[in-house]
Length: 178
Image (tube, rainbow, N blue to C red; front, side, top):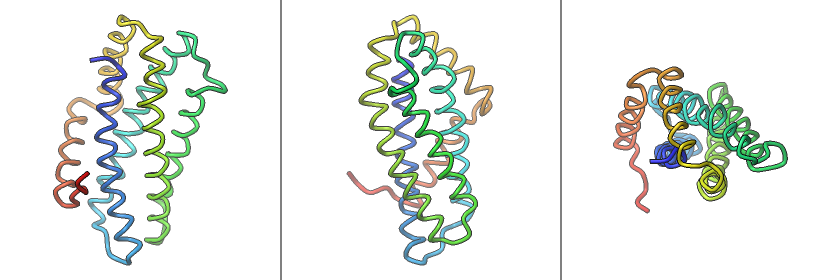
């Protein structure tokens, strides 16, 4: 597997989390209660798995490797992805600090739309560029560094625990069949 292949695999889990978030937003907009513990678990997934781990791999390792290979940060796709990561963090903060169900739902919807489009750009443009510019040795080295970053940023075994949590939430909040 390549470094970009691993990031694409992680996107699958992120998309599932976005679908669950969408269910939460629909319930909140309809005036229904959302289980606070489940919402907090999903918020932790977004903060730790998506931001610290996944975005950490991109920002600290992949993007610098792409810059070194000649892809500019400013005025190009890397700069745009960094900007979108920042916007996503603001939506996550908004989800956690909003005082009404409607405000939480608004932040969820903004985040879901942003991340859906963001993932599409990364999978179909940015990672393709990375694959064209990064040789196999660099991709292998990035994978090793990804593992190290994951252990340091979120801790051993935490990645698997996040997937278990996501699987439990998918049973409670079934994803639509596509």
